[in-house]
Image (cartoon, rainbow, N blue to C red):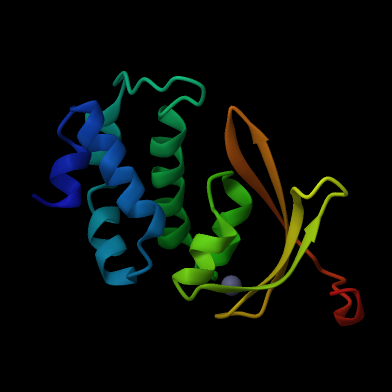
Length: 151
Ligand SMILES: [Zn+2]
């Protein structure tokens, strides 16, 4: 079954799963195929109850659609999408070969405060704040005046 089949199935679990696939998909050909069906995806998911206990699962669908629109409308690096969502784990992105964690800054009690990351595709630098409130989330912010000596 394809990601498109899952997206338009009106089955909450399958839609959620498909949104997870889109979140990490970087193949522009595969994404473009989905963009061709963007109207169908919007119609098929309208008013669909996606549930979610502490974080509404609808945010995954909103992000998936935003990502398809981003790829449709721009040639920008995929890393720009990190700033539009709070579910991108820097360690996972590093394992996937998308970014490099240059440093990890901890709080005095040993928790991660933030990471300094570099996109391995376009070289953009990010400060990524890690927080936990019911679930772990990350805030990605571009560092336009990044100073190499700070890292
Ligand atoms: Zn980038």
